[in-house]
Amino acid sequence: MNSTFKDEEIAEVAHNINASFRLVAAEYAQFWRELPPEAWERVDSLRQVKLLRENPDLSPQQEHEAWMRERIQHGWSWGAERNADRKQNPLLVEWDELPGAYRARSIASFQVIRTMLGT
Image 1: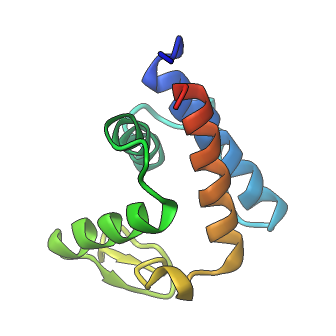
Image 2: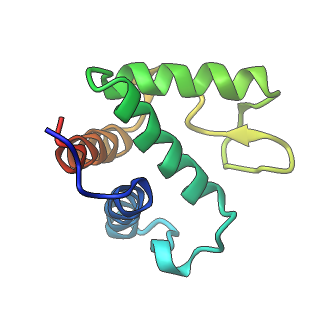
């Protein structure tokens, strides 16, 4: 089955699901249309859509592991808060160590992306 949605449309929906989860948890988040075009959230959402388009059987855990390897290769390390200037991110931990809320929103986002891709 082929998707009738463009990658950016799918990324927008997936991002807004993540933003909704974050806002419910009283975390700071912006919806897609509030973000500047070059925002890391947009870039990462589009990366996920393209990755799942190319690898439809990839699990959220496998994607997280690939994301971690890529970040570490680019000089990122664990930090208590996300800080792009210092290249620190609190999510640079193994899947089982991630907060349950993060795993839940990742799984939900994957399901939406897969549905919209028609896979």
